Image (cartoon, rainbow, N blue to C red; front, side, top):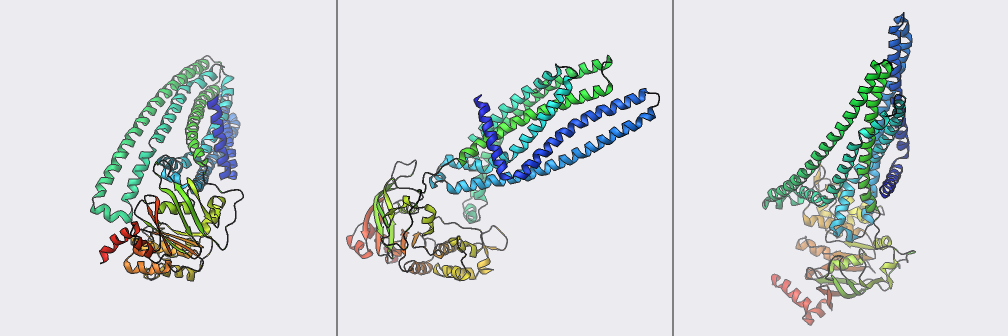
Length: 599
């Protein structure tokens, strides 16, 4: 009983998704399917009437005189056949339209949820497996649910009508018809469950194989892949994974085919028994030739409709399993939520950003990434955060963006905790250059303009941002200037070096005139001259703007008003460059180690 309730719940969920995707097409498709069922039954009855009319005419004194009635019946049969063919074509067209609309709707839901869930999910392998299934498996299967359901309804309607027709011949034929395909249905349901379990268990391997394929086709990796002979290694690993998956899938297919053959054998035996009885009745003269043809065709068609009904039920059950995956994915709720109602962000800022004794540990980790860290950035102040790799610099950026909430302590803006603000409103007040920035295969203009996606930046603002990031001259040298498509995704494109991509991403950051600018390693890929020009731009912000620069290259931070030094997740030192050098601690040691190469 529990299974039935769950299946009905999944059915309701599927219908709601389909209804949201395309109401008009769904209703039209349902009408066509019902019409097909009625026309199919009409064809069966007309076939009997035609044969009986021909038989009666041949037995009468004037066979030619019966041709008129036969002709009328044949005419009706032809009309029904034409309508059936038209409905079949319309059914196919509507199915394709509906499948596309449902698939697109589900993809939009998945994309929206992917942008809503917490950042920590993307650092979890189980979530990535679930996301892979939601993106690859679910939309196509969910789009088929309505088609399957309507086929089941059509088969059920036809089966009821045919069962009533066969009952007029003999009551026992109906249970034989219903039982004949039952073993095959049971086998199909078991096979569907096995297929679903296999797909779920192998999501990680499927994702791994897909990743090797992406690596082999990535332009930015092409040089390194060739020099280190990684084509052989990656393609070998891809081949090994696919061979394993293919072998397991073929084993499932062989098992399913064997079970289906056994089920078909049971149905064939039942059909022979019924045909023998009908033939016996015909030879005894208790039924007409038309009755024989109609009952033969009715039982055969009824068996086919029962097969479709049970097969469709099994397919729906299989698809509903994937719908469970989708519903679980879409039901994910972010841990980091906006308060109701959120407080407003001060404009302009008065006291600035304060990090108060913040401790944070990534989910699944036992070692804190930050421990009891405090710092303060006032409006108009230029702040630098430095430290060795793994010291917690980038983690602090994530907390400042409120991708995570601190485990202990808090981050405030003019005394208001970030947790009391709307994240969307907060993101509009910060401009961030991420160390792992995006390289978008769009035009140079669009790449920069996305820094102010909510507005409509003009050409002058875009070029000004490009000048501040030292990207303007490079872009002007491209084949179509700012309209050149970057990357290798399209024809007539221009591929950039890592440093050039960094300049474009930095221009995107500088386009947004936010009161707070955060730069995480903004010049790591640039040459010395470009770095100097970019740093001059960064260290000369608009009045009242807070500038935070994260870098492990200490030559970039000398002009900061205050430098915070992180070591192993803790705040080790703070002060100006001169103060820290006189202190002779961690900063002085790191600076001297880097400066020795320039002496």
